[in-house]
Image (cartoon, rainbow, N blue to C red; front, side, top):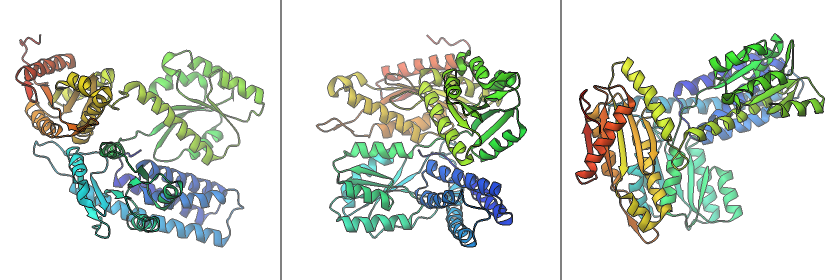
Length: 542
């Protein structure tokens, strides 16, 4: 997963980690060590989720060392403290260097594009291909360029230094001896600790793959992988999303137990809210909208099991995870609790680092389930229903702010012929390419959904119809240049689009109908073009 993050966010992580260690050094109590290990574990997971490969490896090594000392007597021995401190200083230095690069990149990207809209491309922006024969891969680099990636090829030994933009390194393993390959990967990882490294044309040999991954490759694409699949993998890796903090509702009558639980979950990526009686849980579910409930088994007037059964009577809360925290050791009662609405059971006293990991992994699965409910399975875009919902919400915001908004209906031209001539799997790949291009070339604040079949619906907040046409025309021209493989060669397709804005209507259904009517005009006019439809109060949208 490659997710969005800011220099400020990473700075806060670094500062929290250093301050947690300083508190332990000032007062070497076990509670302070727990706080440090939880903070370190959180930082390590953050680096993993963000794909900051080299830093991730250093953080994992430090975390493993700290966990080995978790059960030691405190204060730690002097040599143990010094070893942890030295590793932390090294990690802190690398984090600071990465923060400075991010700050430089952030300043450079505060540009305004030709259409007057902020230029925001999520994920990484550039790919460096390293090969003995870089000219061989120019076609692939051109394809990546259409998707908004700056791609360049370099010979081994001629790699430029990274300045303020961390590229993804795509390295060619073809015809490279294993010892030489190992040294090259190791050298790249040492030189570019924060860059992702993707190897391609790697022989399917266990020892070679094991060595490549151990030395620093994040992903290995096997020998014979077609170019379009390499492009697809890079696009998938490059996509980014902003994660909202995990929201945890604690139902616990003991203030001491609540404080311990909140301490175990005290990190920037988690928000906790505690209530002291289960009769408040339905109100808090509606108001707080948690991703997970942590609940005691035994509370005055109502057990955790009874509260879980009440929660499960509501359809909207059937899938929310419920994790019991209790001193109950009777296995039969634990099993019964799980049968009657619970999902997990941890006995007190619990390991705070383990609780932290369990909570986050459970929330991730819950969010993945919810994501699949509102996303199109082929493209990962909003599905029909969630697209309209997102447009409705954004339209209301734009109306309150008195700002323009455009809705664009897009249809791939003569798509039925693609399916009939080349087959549905090739047609699916064309649809995915359309989705990738829209995601890569539009802003993260824009709404992109698959409306059905080969139709897409796009919302551009802050853009009127003329601005939207400028943005989509550039995408349309580049999409028409993409080469789609069909097993015997390549072919090209185009798309048409209809645009409507909210100058005289704030109703999403009106804009969708208007955009659809404009799309019909674009098709009638010969396809491969965009038509604008500006609403008027008396205009017929039939």
